[in-house]
Image (cartoon, rainbow, N blue to C red; front, side, top):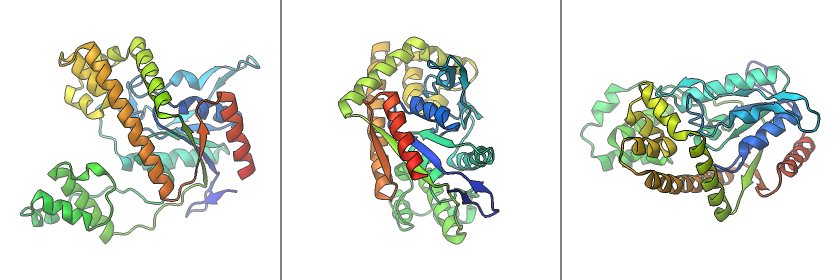
Length: 319
C-alpha cells in the first residue's frame, strides 16, 4: 500500500490528526507515533518559528518521557517545527517544500508519518495535489492594472476562479498579488503533486466544551509564562507590528505589554479571539469534506487510550 513519486520513490500511507485548537491533537499524534513506530509532522503555520512555543501550543514536552507501563524512556521525532526565526518570512510555498522533503525522509526510513495540525492552508498544502510555487513579480501586469479600482481588481480576481484565501481582497496589494499568482498559474500550468494515501481523523467537541478547554488552556499557558515569552521576543529585537501580525496570543499580549490593554482585558479579548479562530477552523474542515476529504471524527471526550485504540484499529484495517 505504498505510492510512488515521479522518480519512483516509495511513500508509505499517512495518518492525519486534525481538529480545532485545544482539542488535544498533539497528545493523540504523539501516542500514535509511539505505537506505530512513527514520526510526527506538524501542519501549523506558527509552530515553524523558533522561540514561539507557548503561544503556538507546541507542547514539546509531550514528545519525550517515560512509558507509564514499561518504565522505558521514549522520544518521538518531530518535523516542521522550529525551522525559521521569529520575524522571518515563512509562507505556504516554503512549507510545502519542507513537508515533501520531511515526508520523503520519514518514508525512506520505513516509518509511519503522523501529520498533526489545525492550520487549514498547511493541511491543504500537505494533502492536496496543488503545487504551490514561487511566483515572480510581474511588473508589466501590475502596470496594466494601475487604472483599475479596488472593486475592479476584486472582480478580475474572481474571474480566475474561487478565492484561495478570503483575505486576498482585503487590501489593494494583496489583491494585486493574488491576481499575479492566478495569472501565472493560468499561463504556466503544473502537473501537480503525487500525494500520499492518507487516513484522516478529526477530534470533535461540542462548542461549549471546546470553549471551556480553550479557557482552561489559556489560563495554564499564561501561568506558564506566555507573557514572558512575548516580552522575550520583543527584547530580542522583534518589532511590535511583527508580533501583531502573528495574531491571537502574540497580538493581544503585545498590546498588553504596550499598555494598550489591562491584563483582564487582554485575557478576555484573547479568549474570545481564540474561540472565533476555532470556529473558523471547524468551517475549514467542513470545506475539506465538501471537497472530497473523508474525515473520521472522534469524540474528543473519549480517553486518550480509547481514541488511540480506535485510530489504530481503523488504520490497520485500512492497510
